[in-house]
Length: 215
Image (tube, rainbow, N blue to C red):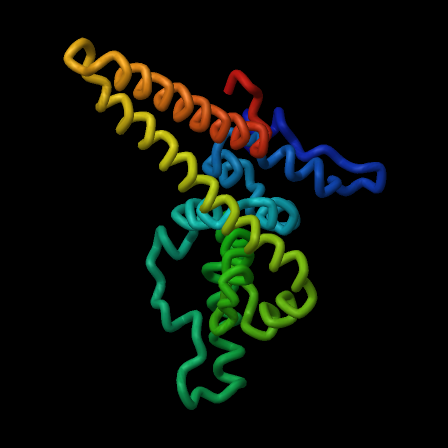
């Protein structure tokens, strides 16, 4: 584990396991997805705790450090072929899990993204289709909430982009002394309101992800 991640180890709860709120605060305070991967927090037992706290773009970012991304295995290794006997498929998929998934540093992120995408056809994060289906059936409320959070995060990001663009557009309309005073004042007020809206959206985002006001 690297120094940065060791200094911010997941805090244990009174039962010995990190509480969900503690995990959420930890993930929010992590410096980067790369740091989570380097610290081993998206594989093994820690991954099952951390990955559900991440948003879909973060999960996809993590997959850029997967074994599949690095070595480009045959995609057919992860799917049962048409007409392939079940026994042959079970042997073949066991090799795939052993050779690729078991050593992947982001296997928990891969599984979590598959669950949110309702993608249970092939092997994902070391889980075979039957296991992925059982996870979906066992965690419907949690997965639905994660999907809703992903949609909210995406819409919030777009709102911040639109607010920043509005400030730039209005600033471009301020043409100094060549514009009548009443129009300059109207433009100034519009820019002030747009700046306030932009700053409020970004402040809300910082608070929601656990950053300080100075961040």
